[in-house]
Length: 99
Image (spheres, rainbow, N blue to C red):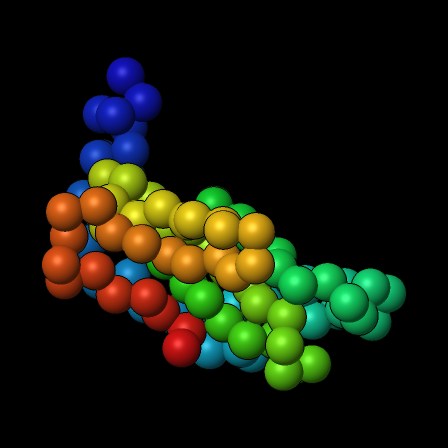
Protein backbone atom coordinates (compact mmCIF):
# COMPACT_ATOMS: atom_id res chain seq x y z
CA UNK A 1 0.00 0.00 0.00
CA UNK A 2 2.73 2.50 0.91
CA UNK A 3 4.53 1.75 -2.36
CA UNK A 4 1.38 2.75 -4.24
CA UNK A 5 1.00 5.91 -2.17
CA UNK A 6 4.67 6.81 -2.62
CA UNK A 7 4.49 6.33 -6.40
CA UNK A 8 1.25 8.35 -6.60
CA UNK A 9 2.89 11.20 -4.69
CA UNK A 10 5.80 11.31 -7.16
CA UNK A 11 3.46 11.24 -10.17
CA UNK A 12 1.54 14.20 -8.76
CA UNK A 13 4.75 16.25 -8.71
CA UNK A 14 6.67 15.16 -11.83
CA UNK A 15 9.32 17.90 -11.73
CA UNK A 16 12.85 16.66 -11.17
CA UNK A 17 14.01 17.07 -7.58
CA UNK A 18 16.69 19.64 -6.97
CA UNK A 19 18.71 21.23 -4.21
CA UNK A 20 17.20 24.69 -3.66
CA UNK A 21 20.21 26.42 -2.12
CA UNK A 22 21.00 27.26 1.48
CA UNK A 23 18.38 30.01 1.80
CA UNK A 24 15.49 27.74 0.75
CA UNK A 25 16.51 24.40 2.27
CA UNK A 26 14.95 24.39 5.74
CA UNK A 27 17.11 21.55 7.03
CA UNK A 28 20.30 23.43 6.10
CA UNK A 29 19.07 26.38 8.15
CA UNK A 30 18.20 24.08 11.05
CA UNK A 31 21.69 22.53 10.98
CA UNK A 32 23.43 25.90 10.77
CA UNK A 33 21.38 27.18 13.72
CA UNK A 34 22.19 24.05 15.71
CA UNK A 35 25.92 24.60 15.14
CA UNK A 36 25.69 27.68 17.38
CA UNK A 37 25.00 25.28 20.28
CA UNK A 38 27.21 22.36 19.22
CA UNK A 39 29.98 23.70 16.97
CA UNK A 40 31.92 20.42 16.98
CA UNK A 41 29.15 18.39 15.32
CA UNK A 42 30.53 16.50 12.30
CA UNK A 43 27.37 15.31 10.56
CA UNK A 44 23.66 15.98 10.51
CA UNK A 45 22.09 12.98 8.77
CA UNK A 46 18.50 12.98 7.54
CA UNK A 47 16.37 10.87 5.23
CA UNK A 48 13.09 12.69 4.76
CA UNK A 49 14.10 15.01 1.88
CA UNK A 50 14.26 12.08 -0.64
CA UNK A 51 17.23 13.71 -2.39
CA UNK A 52 20.86 12.64 -1.95
CA UNK A 53 22.47 15.79 -0.52
CA UNK A 54 25.92 16.44 0.93
CA UNK A 55 26.29 20.09 1.91
CA UNK A 56 29.07 21.76 3.90
CA UNK A 57 27.64 24.00 6.59
CA UNK A 58 28.55 27.53 7.69
CA UNK A 59 31.54 26.48 9.81
CA UNK A 60 33.21 25.03 6.70
CA UNK A 61 33.60 21.58 8.27
CA UNK A 62 30.27 20.11 9.42
CA UNK A 63 28.02 18.51 6.82
CA UNK A 64 24.29 18.20 6.27
CA UNK A 65 23.76 14.80 4.62
CA UNK A 66 20.45 13.54 3.32
CA UNK A 67 20.49 9.88 2.34
CA UNK A 68 18.06 10.32 -0.53
CA UNK A 69 15.79 7.37 -1.28
CA UNK A 70 16.01 3.88 -2.61
CA UNK A 71 13.09 4.06 -5.06
CA UNK A 72 14.30 6.97 -7.22
CA UNK A 73 18.06 7.12 -6.62
CA UNK A 74 19.09 3.79 -5.03
CA UNK A 75 21.15 5.94 -2.66
CA UNK A 76 22.47 5.06 0.77
CA UNK A 77 25.14 6.20 3.23
CA UNK A 78 28.31 4.46 4.37
CA UNK A 79 30.23 5.54 7.46
CA UNK A 80 33.69 3.97 7.87
CA UNK A 81 34.38 5.44 11.30
CA UNK A 82 36.08 8.48 9.79
CA UNK A 83 34.02 9.69 6.84
CA UNK A 84 30.42 9.50 5.66
CA UNK A 85 29.85 8.93 1.95
CA UNK A 86 26.73 8.77 -0.16
CA UNK A 87 26.73 5.85 -2.58
CA UNK A 88 24.43 4.48 -5.23
CA UNK A 89 23.49 0.84 -5.81
CA UNK A 90 23.64 -0.13 -9.49
CA UNK A 91 23.03 3.49 -10.49
CA UNK A 92 26.09 4.83 -12.28
CA UNK A 93 24.22 8.07 -13.03
CA UNK A 94 23.63 8.78 -9.33
CA UNK A 95 24.20 12.41 -8.41
CA UNK A 96 24.89 13.97 -5.03
CA UNK A 97 23.26 17.39 -4.74
CA UNK A 98 24.61 20.36 -2.80
CA UNK A 99 28.29 19.95 -3.61
